[in-house]
Image (spheres, rainbow, N blue to C red):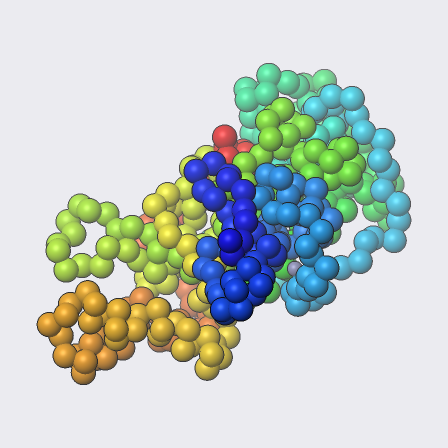
Length: 412
Ligand SMILES: [Zn+2]
């Protein structure tokens, strides 16, 4: 026996910690399909080891094998807690009380032109909804739509809303018409709005981890915060007796098996329509998160720089196309398409031809080599969903509509 693992669904997951050289009878052994704490730490947005240990049963990990665990991203990404104590009195029912706040403007707009986000936290379940906004005034449409969504999807009515004194969050007429009680914090006392203030801090801590892990340009901060909220909603918290916000709201346990490392390289299958025999079967992409309302993955095409959604995706979770290249990582890239591999596929090729083909296909499949990560991002025009470059006159990207949906559909 060289290792042990557990069955999760249809997959046997090998526990890396159980592999010893003794088990291999002294023969050096290596494995490729290993799921360990580091991989889950990266997939889940860099939570603490203790948080991962609280869900090891569903992740297929063994407890107490994380003594040597170290992450170089976490110290860079995580800010210490706010200096005031959060009030932990939780309302009895979902939607009894919402906490809302707007964050921004951020100096760098996202690729879709967003500069703000609205955060809504349900007091009872601590489920968070995050809506990207181009201007603060968009909240006038987004928040009433959210109240309608609650009524339709959860058959519930919101009873109270707490916010700071921001003028754009004074929905006096709306609250009056719906019988909603509004609570405001006193000026200069953010601690009275501490639930959402802390949530902002948590979201940004996780978003920084995702951004640093993938080495993404700043214009992708919108995808980082959306993915943060998606992950935070699915992680257990002591405040909810080690249940996740998702579970408290829906009475279902979240699924983890589809989660992948944000910002990694992946390949999405190309459409069989209009594809001839010698066109690539897949496109090199970067994984940008979990689009609400779709059972698929949000992907950035590395060649065309367009965004699309696909469910037929193969992931390489330890390769980050925007990471700063090192000689070692570059050789890793090329080794994936070695001459021997190509000769195995087409035995009639000469070694020299295989070598040339290897270099040519490397440029096709790994555009990072042609597009250095630190060149051109800040000055590039915004990209549109669906393949068109946006010059400000194009219609709004479809992806914004997706993000206005409720963020929990993906896993259900
Ligand atoms: Zn980390």
